[in-house]
Length: 179
Ligand SMILES: [Zn+2]
Image (tube, rainbow, N blue to C red):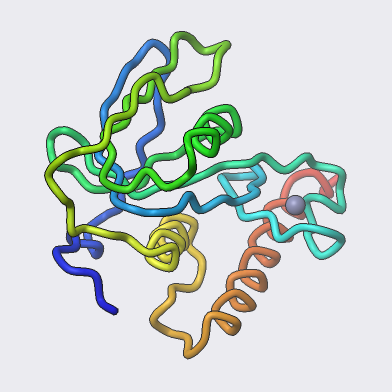
């Protein structure tokens, strides 16, 4: 089923990252949190896990990040990025926070962001981003293959993995092996 009333996805995707010392409110427009493992090499890259991942193979520790589709109080759609700390808080609240207004606060840079308030909105929101749409937007940001070019999810996942491995290989091969 096609979800109705989607925000314009083809615009540049905004990733909301709670900065230290801020409190921000968002309307959640997805049912699930899409979790990824990433590496920071030249930029944020997808970790494909296990021995297939060139970064893990070199002993680099992957980092957990969670993403939910969210709209700011000014009506800007995007993806809210949560660290593992906030991700735990999220799942403790039951996981599905669709149509909830959440307040994300981060007291200072030594503390991860967390959910300081969460309220179900009485007005029903028909905007729902699926996990595929969230992942597709993340692929756009990370310059990985997009959903529409592939027939099945399985082929799409394979293409993402292949591209992510190539990115990591390129990043890791660049300066450090020169000597
Ligand atoms: Zn990895």
